[in-house]
Length: 398
Ligand SMILES: [Zn+2]
Image (tube, rainbow, N blue to C red):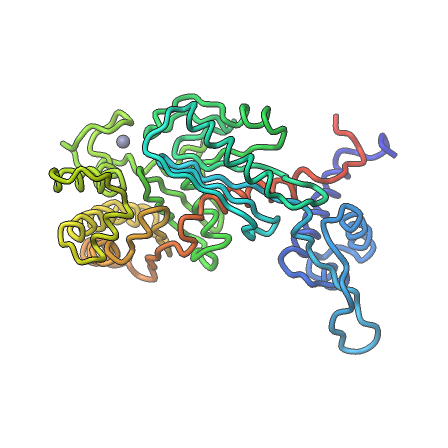
């Protein structure tokens, strides 16, 4: 058998099997006949591919479904607990890790926050989080199918981290290090790209196809969904909009430029301003304490958020004029301050953005809380497993 199949037959079969699996994932419970009619594959092909998926425990059969008469068909269900995926959002001042099933439902999570860690300390924290998630994984046919990590930096096509200015990392091969330690496929992605995907798949972006996702944490990153797909640029570097210049004579940025957007509209700038405005107070500021202060009516803190909201509006206005999106999503940690930044941000856009670009434009805040990136990278790993890796190939390629 092995040698008789050609490469082309193999590819076609793989594609058809992905198609059948995708149909079951999206529309389960579904019958074999319905899969045949919606995919255009003939019933025999569907039947044999379904049998393979059943053998591989990726799908289950359930009791009969509805029928308009005659024999009721057996329905097929996606076995979303055939394996699990780990998604990590590696922030500058936190690491959030989640364990999801193959459909993106969160089964367990772990988070640590800190102020500043060296690369070695950060990797140690990362190992601890991954170890805890691995230990919490229920038993399943495939176990953990992949680890996805969203990082606040520039990731090249080989998934090496070229530069993460706020972490002070250069040329880091985190993928290689983790794959060697855990012997599980690892995906590294820019956190804003992963967040944009998380929002498109699970969040407020579900029904939109042209989305600008603005991830506002210590830095600012932007992920773009264009025509329904994640756009990552020619070499994977798109979305470094936190480093677009908004003040020509502005302060120097760790990226080498000056007057970068993220120096005026991020958590980093908010914390700096808070420190400057309250010199007597030696307490450690955090985004959360400033939100608490604003909520208790303290005007200084409210002003700090008004400034952040306005400067977010300045950058977002520029981005809207470039891309004419249908939706802008504000995500990551700063989305927790929606109550205070929404109005100044929207006011800026209303007053400054070209009127025709405002037509049909929605500005939303993430409703995945701070989980967009972790969910996005967990989904990348799960999909990589489901659609590219699993098939018990009956020919060896090459
Ligand atoms: Zn910069």
